[in-house]
Amino acid sequence: MTTKCSKDIEKDVCELKAMVKSQNKRIDELIKHIKDGCNPEEPQELESTLGNMNPYIECLNPDILYHLNLDTVTTDFPKVFGDVRFVCLGGTESRMEKFANYIMKEIGLKMSQSVQLKNISAEGHRYALYKVGPVLCASHGIGGPSISIVLHELIKLVFHAKCQDPVFFRMGTSGGITVEPGTVVITSEALDGQLRPVHEVVVQTQPQLRPTTLDQDLAKTLRSLSNPCGDGYDTVLGKTLCTNDFYEGQSRLDGAFCDYTPEKKMAFLEKLSQSGVVNIEMESTAFASLTSQANIRAAVVCVTLLNRMEGDQIDAPPARLKDYDTRPQILIARYIRKAMYGEPPAEDSSYTCDCSGDQN
Ligand SMILES: O=P(O)(O)O[C@H]1O[C@H](CO)[C@@H](O)[C@H]1O
Ligand SMILES: O=c1cc[nH]c(=O)[nH]1
Image 1 (cartoon, helix red, strand yellow):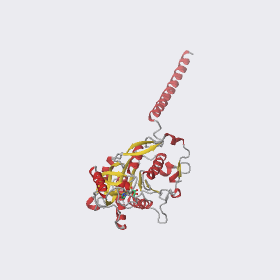
Image 2: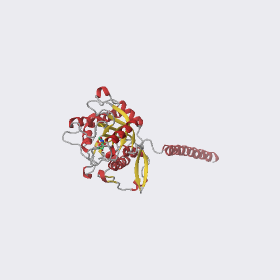
Image 3: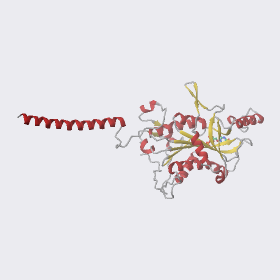
Image 4: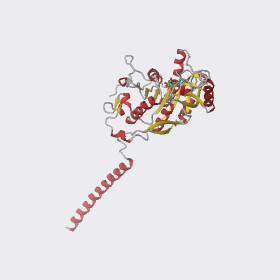
């Protein structure tokens, strides 16, 4: 009796030990699960890599990107835009459409001949937006207010899409200070009309001065991709003056109004040159401050259309202006190709994309 009883107890003990062992194993798994934050075998849900975003955005359902004619309910942002790695902006719709077609070839993407690239934001009637695989191409219009609006919406777009470390570029035109027309300038520092490295935003009557930080490594990498001998033109790094006006703001003598003398104009341009300014345009401070606020790496690449030391009017023939316009595009395309492939893509790249602009 006693023997049988102790045998039963032994058996129970054995079973209990097995149970405890199995439970300990499960507890270990759960502890690991808690430490790892998720099951590594499950696909990981990526988060946006942007910083300092407006906390109220999360409460918006839908979030309507009015000027881009997009919203987060009718478009599945992670699905449609989640693969975006490069966001390229330039003043005009035609430049950005041209760039979209150019970058498609440069990165080895192909589209059926019967299909045309679609302007995703056409119905918004404000800005153009094209998607070519991992490259978004957007127009921004003229001046700080115009680029600021499209940047708010593009930054929200890449945030909602949970894009991973997107890089932003502005590809533009500018007036040169002493440099040869056709020179490509990569902005080292963007200065406002008072030569301050800030973008002034008036919020509820209060002027806020936001730093215009640009990624210096990105600027140097871009510079290293230029090839003055092969290209046939110079690519330089230098400071950019960003103004709120093309005429008086840039000290021109050919605006509708002018209350300074030619001598004062030249003295101002000399002062710019002595401060290290090599070109003048109208969006770099807003572009630099908005991108850096979101921790986005960004660069400004502008070609010079004229040497402002020699005149104010842009009188180069159309064919030459067209050629100048492509120069920042060529440099940025080199960067994108290198970032994507390390080397140029093979002739018959297997990378495929939906370039038709379908959003769902
Ligand atoms: O050629 P985009 O990119 O428009 O840039 C420059 O040209 C415009 C003025 O003609 C301004 O927007 C200036 O910044
Ligand atoms: O002189 C110029 C040329 C192009 N864009 C500018 O803003 N200024």
